[in-house]
Length: 56
Image (cartoon, rainbow, N blue to C red; front, side):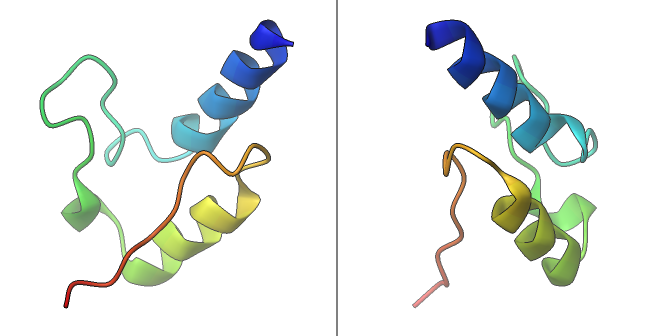
């Protein structure tokens, strides 16, 4: 089960390499893609590991 979860998480972030830089700090650069593209990638994430929260 853990292997599937890690594999699925990899699919969540691998499609936007300019946004998700594993090992970097911070590891997410939301400005590297459009809001529409980010939203689409979050929807495609099979594990639900990613979510988007609006700034208040």
